Length: 97
Image (cartoon, rainbow, N blue to C red; front, side, top):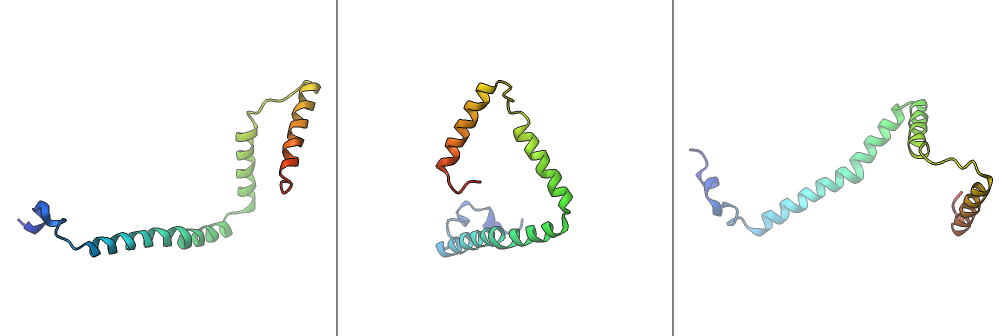
């Protein structure tokens, strides 16, 4: 049977703490490097390849999925009340288009 020291339960308890700390820091370093540098660089490369028409189609699909199920106000009084509410909300956020 190979590596009998791995079979014993106290194998991991006998390891020095700095090895575990080094493994944890190295693991987090790898994850953060992937997240902050590798993934954005790959996204830029993919964005350069994807045609604009695909992006527009994706935007239309997303808009229809979000707004397509919203109610349509046929009553002029209800529409006016909703528009007044939206105008008041827009006044509260001056940087919003």
